[in-house]
Image 1 (cartoon, rainbow, N blue to C red):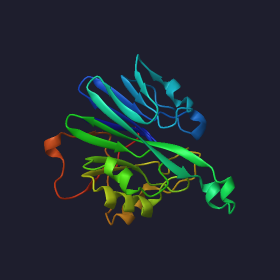
Image 2 (cartoon, one colour):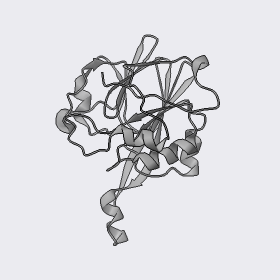
Image 3 (cartoon, rainbow, N blue to C red):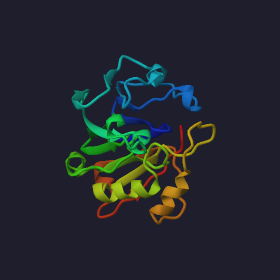
Length: 218
């Protein structure tokens, strides 16, 4: 499996001849939208117009459920999260819940979880859906998503073999997010040199430890 980071929360997974694109974004966030072709597109937010940058006769996944396409298995896990605005509102009647979908993708006997814009802790049921995940893509930039400290808590609960941070500060990004260095510090690791892609086979995954992979935007 080859994994590329296309910026923010967008990734491209290449499994054999099949290309999976997760969460393409629009120019509204300040970054140049990724132009790529896909066989499968996974969207955490169905209302996003970022999908316009993806070409091909792709199979679209945009919500909770179980899916199979071209030998790739995808599990959409619906979560309920309370918006930041609602948390500071003392009137419980005014609290608005937002639907967040995180995904588990399985191919080549490797399990990859993408936590989208997660901004809360996971309960036991949700953690059960992520049991034995090999690679965890986790937001770390704070603001409306997990910050470094909360991301570390999630990682300690899931116990993946590999962590790939996402949704952090980038040049030209309009969203106010913390740099990835904050997350690395919270994980008690020194600065990691980014790589332009992560190539992995099941047999090469680390045992009894969690590795951190920082990807360059491609």
